[in-house]
Image (cartoon, rainbow, N blue to C red; front, top):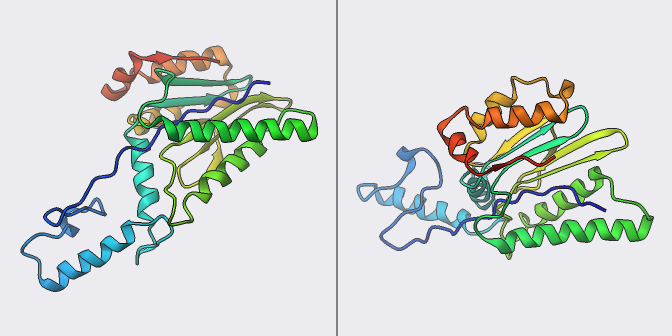
Length: 234
């Protein structure tokens, strides 16, 4: 039995805070407190910081900062391009290896292996990717619900070929998952997505997808850097 491919982008260390530094919770620099702020503004900033400490705590505007930080770690990690065609799934993966904190990756891989093994032991057949996707997604989502744990800093792309044809899913650090014909994660995600959207992937075979994956990797400076380490298995 071959377990569907997993790409994992581990979380990176948190930024520490001291009484002389401030952590920016939003991308808007105007919202960042400064020494000239009024006491009320400074108190508001300290109160806002309380929502930063736990994955189980919502901010007043409905955000969960710990999940956002995990997603940011994925955006700063190595690039992955995944394309699903009419006869298979192609992964273009930077270095085909895990970078960063390996323990996160091992935990997810072992969970997926355990789910696949348990399903086969119980039903005598390989686990359909739909069920493996749901179980891994629920496992990752559970780590966004409690204050004693942190979200996994990785996005996972699952791909396989089943009786009805190729199947591919992506799971983000919040546990949200969707099926795709084409997707990308990592530093050069946006540039890759722009090129993927131009393709009619459902009409393309694996050999064409390999060529397109290599072509997409040359379209931007970030992707050109990625191309130096590109392996394309299918």
